[in-house]
Length: 390
Image 1 (cartoon, rainbow, N blue to C red):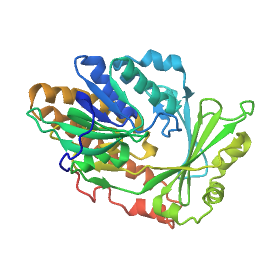
Image 2: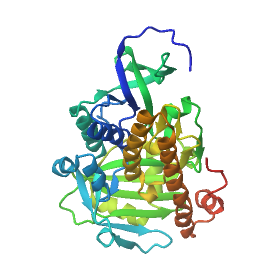
Image 3: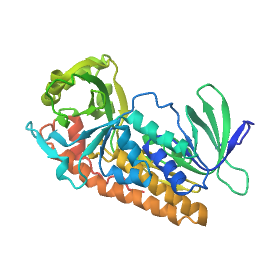
Image 4: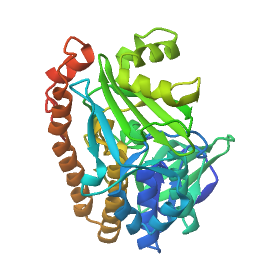
């Protein structure tokens, strides 16, 4: 932090400022505005929800959370999703194993149009009286110089305009980068270097094809493909960042060549796709946890606090659950002045992450065909607990 040397226009003062308008940040904002109407809440989002977003798979266990946020019926009516009833996994064998979601206690799953889903959450927050600042980034975080404490944020709009926002409490919902928490002194503990390299396809709706999620391991990682609304298919190559950098300059050609190592995924694409994007979208997908998920007048939620391998399908569900839990913790803290509720939230995040680690390791060790590969060898040799948990 630095001294405030800039006199910027003050947008206003809020009780809680949330930076990051994904599922975690919006869930926290919605929970506060839905169940604590007196709270002044601001949501700061760097985009305008125009670009495609990744991370679409959720189970129907999401519905109780949406019900708590009083948005479930709106979600179901919007229908910006495809129902998913099964996962085909070619993992440890070339023979696909089929897991029907109808046999699971939570029932069918949903494959979301993430752009529409995230925008719906933010729009609902705004309609409930929340302050929504789109296309804004946090430039500076300063300690508020008054008795109430909190923070003074310097924001920059994409137009170049700069202004300030004062908040009693700050929430980091910036995803795996944890931009806010790291500025406040937290450190991210990384357990791998996984990334997802995605490409979107238009599919022929008349073609006979399975609408299941398909997961398939390959020598240098694994493939994921899933149908999306509006007759689209997303295909993602999961590998380590270093291995992807070694693939050469023609990344699109490399991506297509690597897909041929996964015969089931390759066949699915050839049988159904009629058009393809020519760009690849690369996103971080590593497992991590912050050494500090809470602090004085701040906490982190969702992927900023802890992130999980996409193989676990925990992403959106954990993000929204942590956002709702964080809202209750913030209320307890602001109304009592005690850290107990924040510490309870911190312990909950740590507990979920601790329970996840051995399961994560177990699933990767189930694949034994490619132990000559750096990707798989690293996961077989890794001790999940080699880094001390915070």
